[in-house]
Amino acid sequence: MLSQYLYISTAPTLPREEVDAILATSARNNPVRGITGLLLFNGRNFLQLLEGEEGEVAALMERITSDPRHSGVSVLDHRAIAARTCPDWAMKRVMIAESIANRRDMLERDLPEGLDPGLRKMIVNFAVLN
Image (cartoon, rainbow, N blue to C red):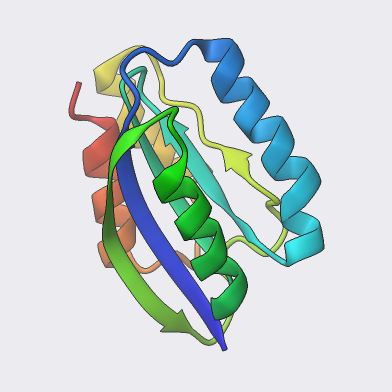
């Protein structure tokens, strides 16, 4: 069964190099595990969408929850899905525009078309918070 998780966490002291290292590790490990998704980082918080077989994604969520680089992991949504929203993204970093005024337009352009409207709204709202 395919499932999808959307979570948020806090990492206020994480340097950009560490975020890049997380993405590199994801790009290397996720294809082997059949995990796809996207990641946003606003300089303080992560918001990540993960999708794949339930057992693989649940195991990854356990590793994420115990990762000392961030805290306060909160699952915003967890659901069974019939098909992947991000089938070609081992872990895409969705860039957040520097200008808050441009963030909504940029995200609407970059987020996958098949994304559930409720999840899309949560992701866009996250990006325009700061």
